Length: 304
Image (cartoon, rainbow, N blue to C red):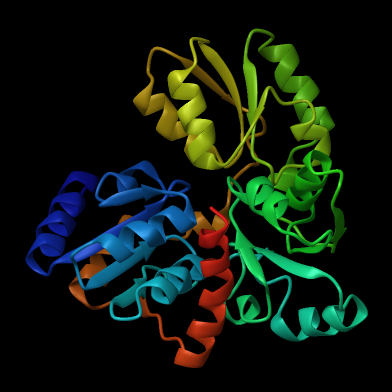
């Protein structure tokens, strides 16, 4: 079966069985093409909560599927490939943060969306890469413990100097593969290109960037800009999607090593097996865990 035949069968089955398919922007093009929604992790979970279908398949990583279940407990949620985890989300657990909280009792715990549902249960407010500065800025508290991404936390701290932000040693292994050397090399090769970087990148990358934002924000910027050349400082799938959407523009990778292997483990065949009922993993959360995890997400929504 070729790509087109696989896609057609998935589209047929998802319509027949009334299944909503979500694809994170880091997924391969052939997967995003059969998805009902494509985007950042939290945005996908919101779209799933509004969708009429009662079954949802997440083509992404585990914490994303858990977030869908947190917001839509009445729906049946599957992770297309059970092996798709997130190294950053696995770097810290509930027990560790409970211990850290005893050392910093007067700190508000802000967790990135890239965390497990279990860890979210002991956090005060959740943020996304696009909302982090706004949400932290609105918190009445001065002392902030930001987890798990040190790079995103540092980027937020730079823009909110009035906050006392404590960071731990966590981060995205994919975005950490590019640094000052890669920036210099890409700038030399493409002097007319703008550098668009994700805030999970090292400070030496974000400080050199012409624009810093989430994957969705990077794509929107490139689409709307009157510039014709861009260096993409995030997962290579974003570069691929932009090449399809804006063929009149040129896109270059900041580094060819910006590949998330956990995202790439999901294949079109995995999606087919999942809609067939022969693959994927059903996401189950204890109701107590779901409700406690939802509190920090609700707080984020309250803060705008």
